Image (cartoon, rainbow, N blue to C red):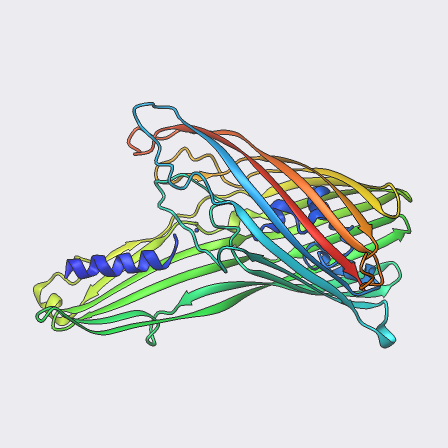
Length: 442
């Protein structure tokens, strides 16, 4: 019976590759990435579906784009006790490789130049969605271990109410694999221990969606000045993987593995874009993130063994187990982003930007918690250029955007209690990356 319980538990854990889309970390598209992500008042194409839907009305023509991105985290983790090695199985996240695409579709007729629809989509190249929640005894990068590997879709509309005021509602949609408790959901097995025969083996799970609203505002008090604000709601993927094993004549074993992954907090961004001159635009963003409501990223496990035979023996409750995850104690943050674009000519633009992103993760000076994260400083640069189609298939110029980034996760230390299996350690990291996009206005 205990062997069957272990087998069922392993099946659950294998089903979940135990733990914000990449846009908050790296930017949506090379132009945004190169300008430090300071796009709340400046996004000028389909990337506005994420940054500020109200900006969609700035594009009067149909706009389409496709981009690829690559980012690699290079960590430095050092034990403070040479006699205690660090279990670093999760210390080096997989490279982030993904593609993005999207379009802006301005409506015609009586609402011409007043209403536009925007769509932005991110798709990782390796998996559709990954849930990654390592054991609490293993250090892992809270923002980077698996949290970037998920399909995400941004749908939005921009509405120009007056020449100086636009608004934009939208939603973010995530994909999620979910098993359900009860009603035949999850994994179910019926076992005859006496004949050592498995009579029933079933699995019921579904690919579901999670939706979070977004709302943006754009105010243009002057022709050269734009002020924007965006609210993005909290979103996460709750993962429940139940397994029911009916041990005929003995009882029923219920296992439930639960986790909260891909968490993005409530966020409010304020931004300004100023056309200093016809050739130069400067942008500035501030972003508040409500991390204090974040759930634990660790797995919780429930084991319930019940039945008349076990009850008669008085051991039905003795084998039950409930290990709820402890809240992580995150703190709210206020970050800063800035960027600039210099348009050398109608064909070529140069861009640069940077940001400061404070960490919500408290010092890990406690046992059984090893979330790696730290205050981050990012620098970026990029270019944009366009050229006429040499094959003369397209009437308008083709736009190419390129960007390169480096993020420094500043050094931090975790001072562990003596009884903890993990030694005290220090850590930092650098994240290198780049993205390229092709865009076209029809």
